[in-house]
Amino acid sequence: MVSDPTEQTVSVVVPYSPKYTPEAMLEEAKATVAAQTVPTELLVVDDVDTGPADARNAGLDRAETRYVAFLDADDLWEPDKLDRQLARMRETGAGLCLAGEPMTLDDFVYEAFVGELDEVTSAILVDTDRVDTRFESTLRRGEDTLYVLEAASAAGVCLCPDLFTRRHHDQSMMASGMAVDEYLAQAKRFGYLVDRRVPEAHPYVGTYYVQLFTTVGQACQREGEYDRAVAYFLRALRISPHPATLVHLLRALVSRAFR
Picture 1 (cartoon, one colour):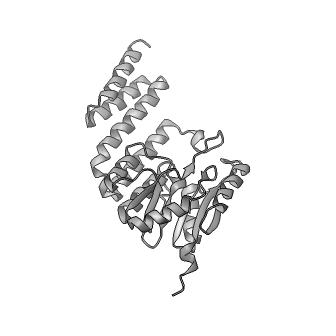
Picture 2: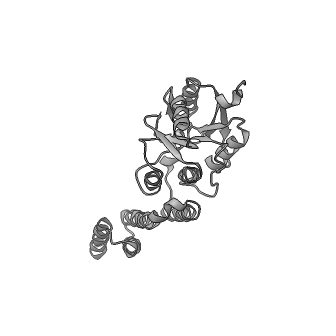
Picture 3: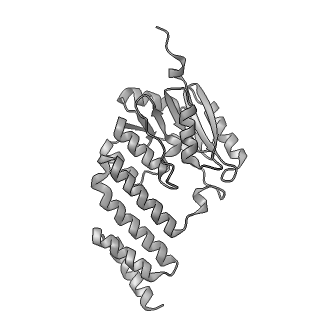
């Protein structure tokens, strides 16, 4: 039986906006796709008007292969990135592969939702025969994390170390920042969607909101908005009396008293 050639090729979706990434960095990223040890189909998708979530979904629509990977235009892949991931997926039967040390699904959900696992997009390799998840276009932050949480919940996840290099620069979307109120609104929607769509995340929802309200309180404190800072620290403490949040609250109270 002759194997289907599309089974051996990986479609690589690269959202690109010159507003956020210099063209020279895009060309360097594309070169690391061409250097892969498995065949690839490169799909560079314009995200100027619609944003990276819609661009990634458009890439999923255009891809004609079973396996689809995503690469941010300012990141660089290791030459054997896809080869190692495909082997790991065959070994584990998982429908999603990311960067990191091997862990259980529960540990992955914890790390992605409230832990230290972030910057996941350029590591994503997904088996579209098993995962039909889409990127949430209503989110301006966390849409990639929501995607991998949903995909892992649906089809399992495996991880491989040292897959890509993250490059930060002044033009990037992450460097542009976000106002506190917009950040809070987006983060609350992200938490709501994770709670609705990822059953494995339910035990960690309280922790997520403690972290969120503490982070927002710290941002307000830096801006000298001590009343708001106190209010958010108290919201966090009502969920769980975390010592770090209590320390931030006391500092905000002192700053408010001596302003």
